[in-house]
Image (cartoon, rainbow, N blue to C red):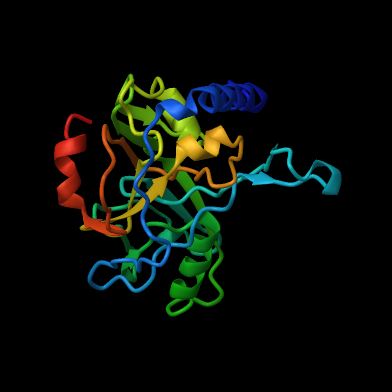
Length: 254
């Protein structure tokens, strides 16, 4: 489905919600001044995703326009990488990113690379190998990787694990999972994103308000491994960070 079709689907949903809005009960919202509860050893939350939409001009400022994004691929555990050295082929190697995010390099030892882009990895390798080689020239190629995915659970028609395509947002992910069930809490879609092996960051997305106002500026882009959960009833409060193990009962089948 192309962008124009997505836009038509979302605006159609917005019109439907605008008509049926009074049927939903008022939502309990979290105060804006509430401070984030950071996990131990985590000093700062990752920067929020860029807005999905932009403005064309003064005359059309109220008309949503899709912003084109081209995010770079971030290396993940299990990815297979080939390193080629132009002048010292003895250092050529194929490595797999280990479960802890490290690779073992010939002549250097372990290096943590999970979360880097290929250009960032190339720069890091050149810096590291400069310690033992004179002006190293390194080429990096991604040989194999796991297809990015997201998990959708809770009050959705078809909860499960789905392939994550580029520029997929929370609203689009809900549509991919079949849309909301009858008693889903549209105003409290929860986005869980891992920030470490033990902790996940939690973001709330009010799709009821966002689609009802036909304003997708706060529609967050998904990242590989993100988890969506749609509750049946409003949750009183949700901490900004929660232990990963606490989510397993909700996403265990996937």
